[in-house]
Amino acid sequence: MLTPAPSARSAADLAAAPLRKARHLIAVGDARVGILETGVLTAPTTYVLVHGLGMSMRYFTDLADELGRDSRVLRVDLHGFGTRSHEQGDLDIPEHADALVDALRGIPRRAPESDARETVLVGQSMGCQIVVDALARYPHAADRAVLIGPTTDPRRRSLLGHAARLGVDGTREPWRANKVVLREYARAGVRRYLVTAAFMFADKIEHKLSRVRVPTLVVRGAKDMIARDDWVQRMAHTLPRGSWAEVPGAPHLTQITHPVTVAELCRRGTPTP
Image (cartoon, rainbow, N blue to C red; front, side, top):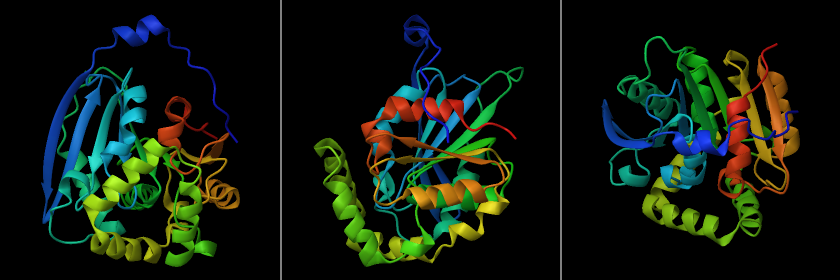
């Protein structure tokens, strides 16, 4: 298991890093993917942040700010969620993965050709399933991956059980995190949430892990009721180049409650065997 380490970058270095912003709307067939590009846009490392069920890029704001101090960050609104919640049509996990990979191909790289460029796919909750599906079928889509609070444990795969665990987790989240969750659930709507939840539970992430060939770090909060420690460890052991880390005291929305720690884990990644 990896543990967080203090950053080697100085405050002066971080303060000097130029921040920029650009918005993109990528049409992929009938799907529409929204992408917010922030951070140091010419940096060689790009982090792609993929949200979970019912959410949007907004709950990555703190993590994106931390990663954006020295890297380029692409925050995604999946088709049907966030700024795209008005879009027609529901996508299953592989369709979301296809749309994500195609959308990323439409975003030009800004780093100089001479730099060693790296792309890191970062999923949270259901976003982990999209990242795993993408990398299992498109092995060159990223150089590394980070899976935060991944769903769904095959031994706990039921909507009622998931809802109960979410309820308990909500009592462990700060109000500002719950406020983001409630706002995004309202934007997505009950029908979209339930249809996508059915796709989420139908997706067998455990059958795809062995096909993910890039170094992959699995992260959970120590108080996460969704991504339990036994599930996270099984994932890390099944991934050909997997490892795992636990953030002390953190619930499911670890990227909101502990953005600095999660950012450092994303930067360190997982050791290559």
